[in-house]
Amino acid sequence: MVKVSVIVPVYKAEKYLDICLDSLINQTFEDFEVICVNDGSPDNCINILRNYSKLDSRIKIFSQKNQGLSSARNTGLKYAKGEYITFVDSDDFLSPIALERMYTNITENNSDYMFSYVYQVYPDRLFYWELPNIKDFQKYISSPTFNEEDLGADFYLKFIYSAWAKMYRHEFIKDFSFPEGLIFEDVPFFANCYLRAERISYDFSPLYFYRKNENSIITSAGKNFLDIFEINKLTTKVFKEAGKYEKYKTILLVSQMENVLIRTIETKGYTKREMFKQLQSTFGDIDFSQFDMSILQKKNIYYAYQEILNKSFNEFRDFERKVKNG
Image (cartoon, rainbow, N blue to C red; front, side, top):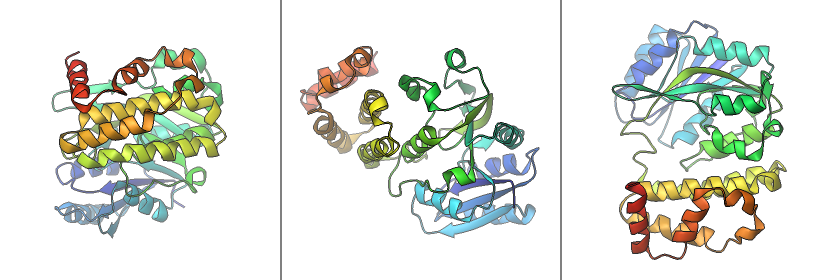
């Protein structure tokens, strides 16, 4: 059995795919396979993949008609043979020591999964994502491993919910999957991992390089931003099934209100009106007194919602302009 499977969903990534694959085949760690799932990409990605698979036999190609990122990741999980799993998006790349550091960390700590820190890649600079904040994190965690019970519920808001920049024990995630046909699919997947892991470990080094580009799914999502409402329902279901809803319900509400408002502000055109309508129908009837008001009253998002829940769409646009202008 190969030690690590690297799952790479591929769609419209010909501009950066070679950088991603180069970063994989040049790892200091060698016992891995790369499961490339060509998700019906209409560009030159399949030819790039074929050339690299000839160069390195660890690169394996699986093609399917376009079904989205979730489906591609689920397909990758279906074919992965590694004892451990990691995900790399096809426009991102890894540090040369990433797999070695991640594998050493997860095996030495006997973790269900581990996470590293991240650099966001801009054309002219790198931005270090220190999430969670190291000093805050170390106030609560001094051991190499922890689980969600070791941290207060509020700490859930401080993590990156992405599937990438993490390595998972295959057996641990074998019953997890990404919800297909939706964007923001990382959120319920992360919740499952975070709530159910008995041992989580970490590496403060930025081993993953995340590139936010103009062709990314989130950047160009448009009307699919409405998926956030279904994702929120699925995530709430994960918390309830894990028996953790009561502990997290206020923090979960804060997280969901923040995500919905951010996406409503980010989206454009007619979808913005639909997002705002759904925002009001989702949160307008909530009895906030049923949640922990001592937490809500410390969150700016609570007061933002008090201001906009009874507003017209045009009044919301005025609120939005104030937010954007600081």
